[in-house]
Length: 283
Image: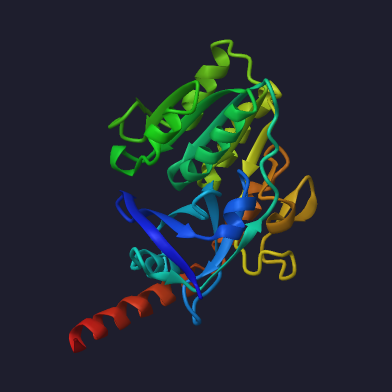
């Protein structure tokens, strides 16, 4: 038996929220952890962060963007359909301080990770400021859910269609320069964004955790696909992360490694679309 989907919600174009039955993970999942799933027997394994857990209902919530073959296959499923298997919870949970001021900086689909982090930080008695970014208003996700939890929420969009026009780093630097005493920053989003968030906080000596999203396969540290360089040492994001000291991460290496399989990813996506067209033509 697979894991049944009980709720599907479209958050933005090609971005969906699934609530899925998984009692084991729902009872144990913590902010910052993730699962690895396969849609079917022929599917690849992909990691997705656990956006929330409901132990009473025995469900977990996942948020994903349709960017390739597997996420498009996932996005084609509906309520009542089953995902073949879920492995988790995996990775280390976010290190949650107490009675501190923490800024959570999210971009794009990364806001799905900010959501549980803000919830956990508030439950521990912290002051939490959320900075959420997107290319435009239509792509901004989970703003209301995060705003309801955070003490302060700042929005930036590349085109100025919502909140401040500009990057999350602009809002973050202004917040620092305003005199706000910040004990820690946590950032999750596109790798380039996280790189520059860390560059923004480094001159001020503000501890910054970056939630990395390297290529993952088995999720147990056996395959080594998720290796990243942190402080000059090789670390495995699936078992030692996904969060690391952002001031020590070799982001340029991570960006290069994430591009390794782009030709294969495009080929798989193109083949998937061709098969879909053939199926439609034959039906």
